[in-house]
Image (cartoon, rainbow, N blue to C red; front, side, top):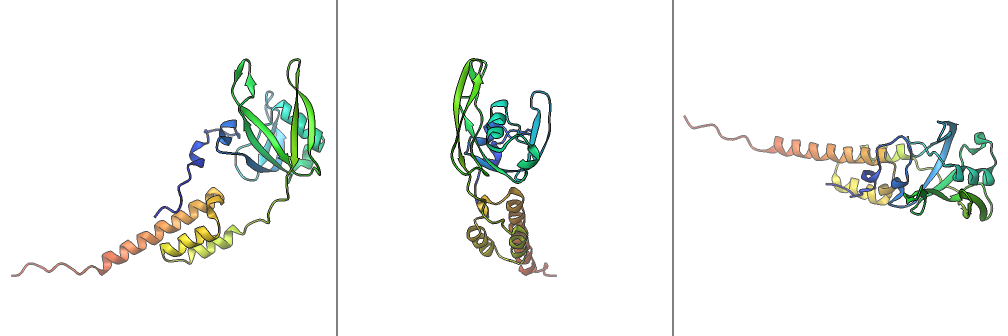
Amino acid sequence: MVLTVDIANSLAPRSDQVNADDLVAGPMTVTIRKVVGGKAEQPFDFLLEETDRAYRPAVTMRRLIAAAWGTNGDQYVGRRLTLYRDPDVTFGRDKVGGIRISHMSHIDKRLEVKLQVTRGKRGTFIVDPLPDAPPARDWDAILATAAGLTDEDSLRDLWTREGLGSAPAQVQDAIKTRVAEVKAAVTAEDAFDQPAEEGAQS
């Protein structure tokens, strides 16, 4: 039995970076694992804890980050950002949508910064403090519990009780794999219990 139906993962474009279209379903809070050099048009990659794809802030967001945190990228490690899709971001004359930052950790009050957005035009960007992250979940312990469960109802209860609909994709996949294993074991047991067909009478 499928434990949940969530199409969010199917909306992500195939890419090595976080894109604005990834955020159609809602904002994403990410934790910076490392900042490394990128390419000329996107000179910095923010490697993230939550995904293998990098966040590559455009120049306006880099200026905003620098205003909040300073320019030493090594100090960004462990800090957090909430990213959202702004449909009004333009490329040339077209509105194509882009990634903006709504919240940041390591600031103690709302930040308002005026930045250039296009030639001759400036805009005000507002960033709110991001509350401390909740304590890290012990996913290994949850998966160990799931491995010891032998019926679908217990696995379904675990899914609901632990709020696994918001768990990392690999945790969800592991639970669903365990459900499939339990179902296969039940099917095999049922087949074993079926009485053998009587042979033809001689």
